[in-house]
Image 1 (cartoon, rainbow, N blue to C red):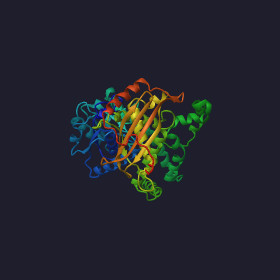
Image 2 (image 1 turned 60 degrees about the vertical axis):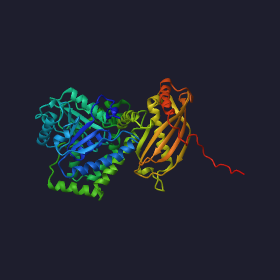
Image 3 (image 1 turned 90 degrees about the horizontal axis):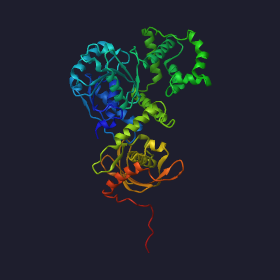
Length: 503
């Protein structure tokens, strides 16, 4: 496949990215690019950048295996460039993620501008510096745009796009299309403003928290509890304004503002931060150490990723299309499914699942538990159905395939972290039925399990079998006819039973 097959948003052609700056944000960008099949040239002169990039990529791989199980999008190739010019020379897109020092960013952005191809977009991860100032020393300032992400970049979908005075509309549009292509939720900042949108909101909460610590009202742990056990749970899917709309009852936001608006005149908040004296810094740092209770940063990162994956997966199941970040996740899953559908196999079979065995799939014997095999084979079946045009939209229209018979053989064992791959073959089909055979192999290509399934096409509204619709039937026939020329699996048509002894 080519990397362009992921593209469903007009950002074709971006196959190589450069990441300049290898901190947590830069490493997160590299991971998101790589897991979208984009080659990455990574540049950071610090000694720790290479190790950080590998560590973040390992965490990202683990998280994405749970968000996009069985995806066959091939991971991009990562190289560590010896110089800045080497990193950006062949890049289609450059993401700069240097520290928030304007003079440093301006100098490096000018160097990137001088070395990168003329049509390369340059995105800056700045969390608050104005793009008009950042592009001031560039010879081609029209191609610079702010692309401000949130940590961890490989999981949180929001990216704020903000252009400077000289940024072209084409740059904004191309950057937005590219960020959407790699699974992000684009928020276009209408006016150039310090801190953009999200950080201005976060900064207000942060300043108020610092005052509450300075005045001895609460500790870091208590402040975090005040958010994570209340508003934070709502913010994950409704934000502030939609939440307050509900607080207004049947009359909505207008009633809420009339009822609670007068409280805004009370002197509750202090938007100017307290002075960060040595005493206050020591107090905050000490409280933070006590709050962490010896838990390492790596352990906290793993807990964070696990929680975010579970929240995102939960939101993806709310409503018919997912809700909030869950809908963004589902849209991206659909885009990746199109890429998966084009993955070639040298034997002519369908590559229907490709992934790794997750820790939670392991049973008391240390092997992948029985029902996970059915789950993987179910994912493989769903991939085949999407390939023939019987995916989510088809189901929402009232048509579906129901599995009426399955036969699974367990031939080997797989353990946590093992790579698994499923290839699928259409063994037969008629006006209402689809006969599938899946073969699961391990990392060495050895067959570890097979499954055979008979599916019946149904009219879901009538609850009865019905002829497969013409477009889907044509797609089934095209693949089925090609697969008819392939060797038939020896296990096809098998059954379970203890043969009676002959006299």
